Image 1: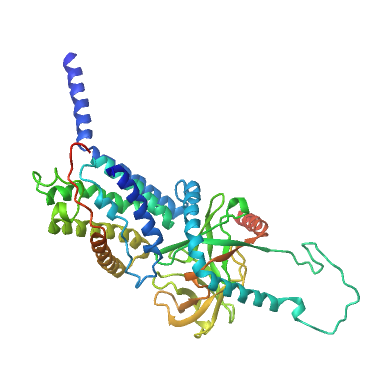
Image 2: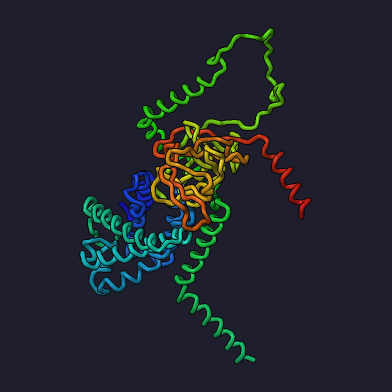
Length: 177
Length: 298
């Protein structure tokens, strides 16, 4: 399956899973909100140009927002993590070895320690931004800290489960593709 | 002459190089600006960009999902409808009896009856196709839109006659409803005992409970008191629809001798399948009159 087709299918799947499975789960607590959809942006291929990455993130965030009733809410966190992603990958990946040989970020292509750092930082940033936007209408600092911590924890757990369930084959990038 | 042109040329080229070098950053800033505009515009008007088209698309997908989900709620929905039917049957004229003193029966189909009463509210049934309770700001989607007579501002009532929310956005066949479980929702309410006015909003904590503020402590509220929609008639709710029951009474630390009440919602937001849209047919007249007085006073 071509990378483009695979990512188009993922686009739809991540939004549907977030909108119709995770958003339907009655919350354990106000602070625990299971977000998983942004993993789509983390899984995009290494080779995607930076400006195109931003545009994809914009469209992705907007589509996600339309399903939850607030079209603006998911846009900004998606844009921020899409902007930070290339810098993080540059820091975490030794330039000469893996980047050229693997298609997309995963446990196998980056090694589990750098990949965990990559996921944890971007998850934290995403949640901090999204809760910050909500915080502006709530205005309670405990809410901000509690919700970022609670949601980050549950999201990391979900991402861990997703990685275990769908062990993506670390495909080597070839000239033919 | 030549030197100046070359200099200007080089400056232009430098600007282009600068833009090209930081193109991604500029694109990021532009998209961030657009996002902020969308967010701010939404918070002001509750209408998203292209919300007409987007509502139709997400509405269709939600409808498909709900067609499946609905089967799992059939029993509960059936029970609610039966209970409501019983309630309405008990209100029927034929349930009451009195020694007959009439001489003649006339069928009167005018909207204005002989006692001078006029129809003020019309109820329209609608299927709930999407409903959330887990967000900070929750919304519903109903399968009924502008083509079927829905307008922005109409109230939404659950199956047992309890307040659910207000219409904030309409497309051709669907409408979006701001649920009472929304931090931005503010509904005027009153205590059933003594008609003391207050305001209902939500703190985002528990989808089963709402917060009621600015009820004066002279009202002597106790646990178990009912909270109704206020008798000040507005566009959305007919007076006296049940909102919930008080479960916790506290003094409001921010208000001056007012209560901070925790109210158990009468509507069960977890399994809403049908709802009624309420239209105030006389709203236009009331609004025109109120606007006119304002102008005279100015």
